[in-house]
Image (cartoon, protein in one colour):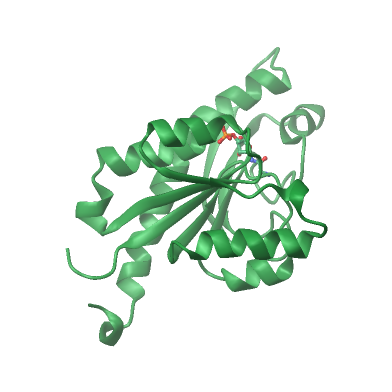
Length: 207
Ligand code: GAR
């Protein structure tokens, strides 16, 4: 396939299991050959994030931009943006990235910034989603892939997966059941988005 490769930059803070699911799907499904897209780098705000080692073992470029080294949210986001933009990303993917982003950062990546949130949005934005779903007596829980806007966990929904809440569930058992679905949902939502981005590229700028 011709044209500029669509680079994906994935941001993580922790174990990086969604990142690994995306990178593995990209390899198995031959995204480079089939849709001209690939994971270019994995960046963490936590230098000790377990997911950085996972990414390195998958052969991906990694970097850390430690938020504790910056005196303001704006300064951190500016440094993170420089690190991301070195890869000229078509898509920036938040995968368990646990930082609130500034409006300037979100605006810079408008239309190419996505997140996965462990609830059926618009229910339960924010933290502790699984315990809150249990406390509310929900019979269904799940995960949502959405475009990121300046309003936390409120951007347009791209894809969702639901799982049953089972008798005796704890936040941990429910989180594990949802996470299994996240690993299926997120790679396919990203693939669909990349394909639609290709379809919507104006002909005169296609190479
Ligand atoms: C996932 O469940 C993801 O949905 C959630 O953190 C976990 C990260 O796991 N994200 C958020 O809560 C964002 N607000 P992972 O690091 O193993 O992919």
